[in-house]
Length: 546
Image (cartoon, rainbow, N blue to C red; front, side, top):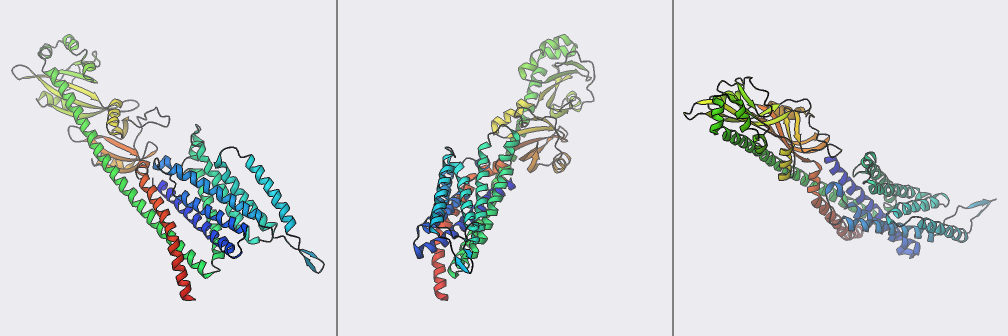
């Protein structure tokens, strides 16, 4: 979860600085335009202003698959693409409109320059045709235009730096090449519905391709930032402006990340409290099952025909009386013994009788007149079975104990499914540290991974050894989950298993998603609002120094 939180904030920070440096270049071209009022300079500063806005808006976009559905992301995403494409197109047109500074030729001792007008016109015309050709082959999806337009901008700056004399523009070409790569990799989100698990994992939010794309964007931001600073630092006013703007961005970034981090921590703590409450509900549900099993046993014990059949050891009559009792009461077994503890009937397997249960603690107490319930673990080949058992004494009219009846209720899939339906949470029951029943499904969405073990030493020591509750974030069945685990105890208060409630750890991010998004949007708005005061402060300082 915290890695996803870091990734979302990394997306926010990288795009903020990309916006800052694009607006810095916008300032450079605006300064040049204000002196000469040339069309190409106008197009360039408008283009970089549009790019700056697109990166600023992109910073506020959250990953809906992780942070939940957004009320703004569809509109914001459309504006990001529109501003990004408009910025690229304006820069392309500005580059085409500006004549190329051709490399001079040496003819003897005379330095003769090529005519700028003709080559520039020819090359611009050729480039315009190429641009039209590119635009024609892109198809209907506007999202595909952004990386192609970015690559075109990179090519134009590279041409100006290599064919022409403007060698200083090479870093800008590199930066836009990296921006184009980041835009292209962002299109991988269109493949997230792929049925191929490998492709799905690669293109998932905060997956491998997501990280490569953002690292590319970060590299482009660093290259562009160094280049921008080297020019803005030449003028005192611009230098002060960038220092103040950078400080404001850093402060806002620290505040927003800190706030969202504290918010996420608070949400996680609240979710863990809710999980503890749900675990208590699950414990209460088990207590209700104990009462249900005890009631079913009590009804049989109060039946005079059952008492007579036990006194006479009439197995046929006991079999007839209990023939439909398992189904009617939804019991997993009914065991009837005589006064000495010998089994007269097992309703689940009527042929298995005659053995003694006098050593069974629950039966022994029932024969002493103590009606009690417990939780027992029955080992099986694949997974243990967790059952609630209740044993009651069978008494004759004189009040003498003549036998015992033990009823069992299995805490299986139906039980945990009911808990999930009531609470909306994933529930699991463990016999020891081995999974007996769960609502969690395997990757195929169908299989319940019963029989698997919890090998977390901290959980086993806290819950099974010490009998205490455990709550926190753990890797549960190959998934990061927030869990609350409480011990499952028998009639002697010995821990025999565990009951757990869980939700995906990313749920805390989804719960905090809207607050995180609003924080990002407010930060972006405050950054925009702070630009004019920064200009006023910078101008005031420059006047005082001058």
